[in-house]
Amino acid sequence: MNISDGVKLAARTLTYKAMDSSKVVNTLIKRITFGSVTRDTLAKNILSGTVNLAQQYACEQKLLGERSAEIVSLGRSVLFDNTMAQVKEGAGPLVSLLMEYNGNNSCSTFLASKIAGHFLPDMLQDYALERILCAWSKQESGSQVMKLAIENALTGVHGGKMIAATFMSVLKRTILDKAEYQSNTALHRIAAKELQWHYTQSKDVVPEMSLCSVISSVTAKTYNHVSSLCLQSEVMRNVWQLPAKIKEVFNEFSTCLPTGAANGDKKTVSDLVELAILAHRTQQPEQVDEMFKMIAELPKELRSEFQNKYEQLKPLLEKMPLSTIAIGHNWLNEIDSVSFEHHGKYAVSPELTNFMKNGFSLPVKLPEEAGDYFAGGSFINELRQGMALHVDNSHKSYGQRAVDVGGNLFSIIKDMFALPEDLSEGQKRQVGQLSDMVNHHPMSLLALTHHIAPKNVLNNVGNKVLNQLNHQSGDVIFTDNRWMKLGPPETKVTVSKSNGVDIATQIVWPVEQLGSSRDAMQLLSSGSSTVSTTVNSHLTFNEQGLKNKSVTISDINIDLAEKLTFRTYPKRNCQLISNGNF
Image 1 (cartoon, rainbow, N blue to C red):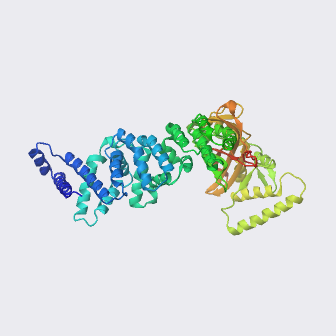
Image 2: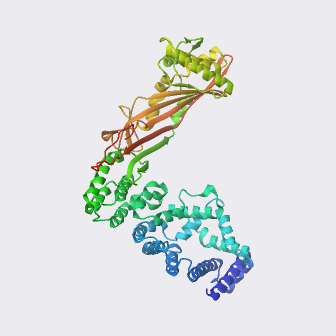
Image 3: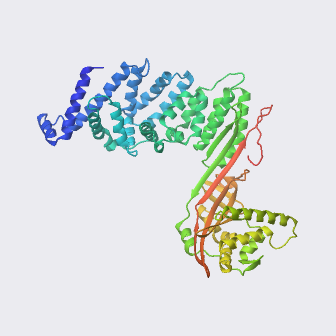
């Protein structure tokens, strides 16, 4: 390391410290040098000198192996005080050098360097390290953690804390407070979180996928795992900006496909299926046509297997919106199944919220007898028809609940041998449990059961809920850029006691068909796709009966799920297995 460079850096640091600490010294030096030496110019020189010394040290100590000088020089060109032209020119070669340093094979090195050449310019941008430091400083206590990191690096150096404080001031003046470095990309933010986590080990700042794990995952895997990595991680889709770049990925992938093999590569078929899914998810299904051209030279058996799987997969890809996709493999590491899940939550409009608060009401029917009790007529009618009612007795003691369990068992046995009648013994016990919630007060029980009428609730708010989702004729809605055909709604009521009595009436519409257009809707076979919401009523009582009530409605939930299962038979045909799933 050049000693004179170190002496110059120390002198500049001391001069900057003096100028930054005293207005008199600052003014005096500016006058003596006729303005050629300022805190800004000194700060830039200190930062540049520090980077130069670090670069010299890394090269002399061969911290990155025999090719340390090339890696460090190219890394500085691509990452620090860099232009877009430098990133475009140096990103691929830099990744290639790092891959070789990590001992990766030539295939993965080639693919990673090519992908880096396509993606890194947009991800890193100009002044990459400067943007990462700015993003780090915006983390919670980021500036303090950065200063602590500098102090740790200077442990054992005389005046280390003073030097660290001075260098922190240099960073703020040259980088952290500069407006031109404040914008950042997903990669800058991931790197910033990784730095923050490294120096704090805080669980609160661990990124969804750390920069180190991204690098190690890409560099440590061969080409046949790259598509899986991109497909399965939301972070990777963000970082790699796949919608704009997927064609280049396909092109680079094609150069690594094995050709002329007698048996083919089973994993290659899995990769192609995963890339087909990725093309649809990034709304570029036309790229799959390019894939078919890529595999034209592969063995016929291999082409046929991919085509069979894709032809069954395509309808499912077209009808599902952007979803969480899970790919299952069998013990031979072949694709066994593809599962789709989509969950959406939508707040209801202020108008519907206001209606629930001020305009919601249920029709009144005359009370009817239910065993030893009188209850609301609508409630009794729906109970006769098999209302899905759950009375939550968790407010009771363990002993009381044990008695209830015994009573329920006795009612079930009695219902098995009883002749058909108005209400079953179990239903009568439910009425008794509701009466117990209001201390067996007759007027309170009437008021409570009046509000347990799910069909009336559905008639009152059902269409209003669907209208939040662009309700069309024929029980069709349009949301998440998809058309959905709904089946007849079902209801479930849960009654519980806290400070009053709570009634949760859940309304569930099964999603029977789904598609990207109304004319292209296709059946969903899993039976687990739904649109749902819950009407919550809170009632309080006094000696006269109902004292007060409040009614709210939950967010609207859309849950879509479907599964495609492949089976391979001796003739290598893929068949759709129907067992409640696709």
